[in-house]
Length: 342
Image (cartoon, rainbow, N blue to C red; front, side, top):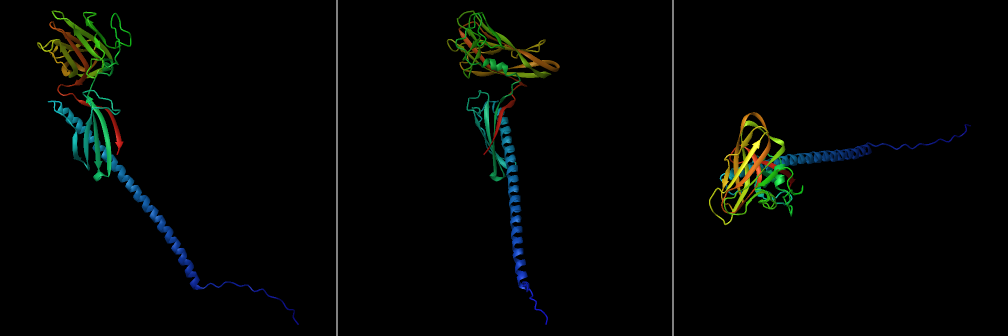
């Protein structure tokens, strides 16, 4: 009789076709969901990127439109100066794929008053139906070939008291301008608060009636030089004021002469001299220079002479010298610029 042996029974799960199909369906759904999420993310990123690109391009276009408004405003402002007519800005104007509107202000970016011959222009440019808006601001005024030191000396802060004789302290007399009165000790050649903006101005004073006269004359050597190609015409504009006591009287009581020099040749302003009677308030005058010769000329010295004729007592002030090219309305230049988003 054979010995009995026990056997081990292994249970193997049966795979039915229905169960396999359910597993594949779940896998497919998961893969579809993942693909849908990835596709959605890709579409979102693409759309966001396209929108950002559109906004960026529209913003750049709005800035270009705002800059065009600045250019047009400065041009029209220049045209309004001859003959003098009020200038108030630019109304909403279609340009390219948008519009610009320009307003003006008489203060700088910090709110401080600008010189009378300068304006701040605020141009708002919009593009793509208002999708983007940019603001450009510019401070503009007549071009000035003269270095800033010329008028910086005129506009030194008031020095009180300022005793010019026998010799003023270094902080009182401008260190660049050599300006002296004739006869000596008759008056001070600078009025510390006599300018149209309340700052220093060149000054002449005839304090007594009769045959006496008064002259305030001087010169300034400056660097860098003013360079022009001769022959050329330059124009000097300036603010001046003449007060007579009593007011009124004959004209041409005040004579003003400028000269420019390159160290060899001296060019005298035209007309020579510039003439004016009693003005009472500040006015703007202009003279021209015919720069002779050929080729490049480097102008390094400017001089002026204020002459008060015999007669009643009178005073005269000169300030804000601006030297530009050509004759007629001065060319305008942008002196400061900034941009903002809106």
